[in-house]
Length: 521
Image 1 (cartoon, rainbow, N blue to C red):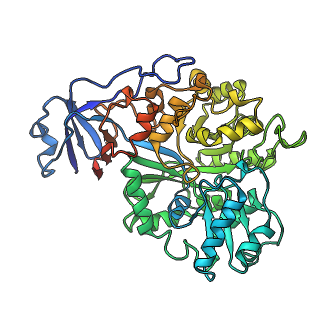
Image 2: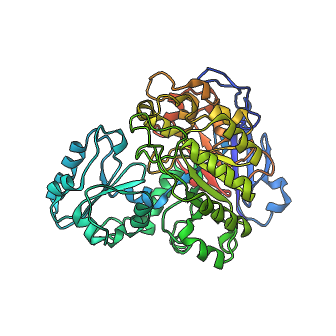
Image 3: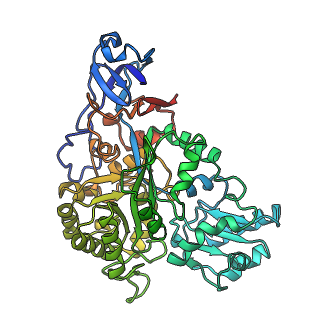
């Protein structure tokens, strides 16, 4: 039995959200308790909350050994934060790849590739972070060949819906040669094979247990206690293996895709089942389905065409309606929740129709462009909206260009809460930074750079954004899960810029998972 006593902390209320704020981009509807209290966690559960607690008065602690104490000194305590949408393998590897963030043109990206190839022509170049959808022209394999020669090059678009490969990489991976990028389903099948390129980051230790551990520690330092891992092509055995090699730091829910579903069913795994017997921190998550594309590749499936792409381009689905429904029905029959990627409003409508017909449980991932009637349908069906608010910061300019007639329906967080939809926030890391405070700030302020809030009528209050970031946990009290985060400022009294800064100014003092301290500033 493990025991932890946090002394003199102010408890932050995350339940009972305040009334909608209309056009106000920010409001602080409540404050943390003014009087500090002690919080006792025993065997992963909050046992007592009150002033000047005496552990000796707890008979069950008599044989548990010494109680670890931490002096909060009046800091603010709230349930631990979750990131409900991550790709942890890609996030881990991103630190060892060529960084293409901030490239405003194909020429800038090509210049970075040329420089990397010049350093070591015998090593493949794998880059990520560029947003080709924001560039004013398309790209070709020929121009990438011109700066890379025989060195295999793979450039992963920031939304992970396509890869820009040169001819050497196409040949090395056994793909048909072409003069355009590799998109959608073909790309998803290719991505897990990148370690076949000798010398690639994943083949040279960039995805080792030690590399994962470093990234998990980085997340813990932000107050993250759990993540849903939606990595492509990664079997459950990978997590089980690294779990025993020092990666048992945070809670992880592992998701499968359709190509791994048969193995999950054969193992009899249901959502919530532990992957390591007796350990509830590593569990089976949902079946992940990618039902349409993305805004950046102009493949998100929409009811109306993209303004800049001609009258026939509505995006496209990645499965037929029958295929989507069959996947949901199979998952539901075997006790699996379903996480359905749907960015365009047509994809959201089709996914909800499949949920209704099959009785499936789960979420719409992204729900970036929605119609109000579909939000209400989401509420009726009990489907969770799993949204990544930091994307609105990155996609704002692109959206104004390609969806200028429907921007008021993008990231419609206020509609969702007002209509009774359960909302969960995440990052989609590494597409956006794995940073719950940035997600909260974006949901509250609809801007973090000082520009005017983007459709502030869809903003959340701080309390609502926190409630959507703690995996459904209530305000800390007796019986609460012993997953806690202690911060240096009252988040309910902070504006968007201050919220976003919590992750960069060392504002997280303590992170606790199951009563065990996993980060201490």
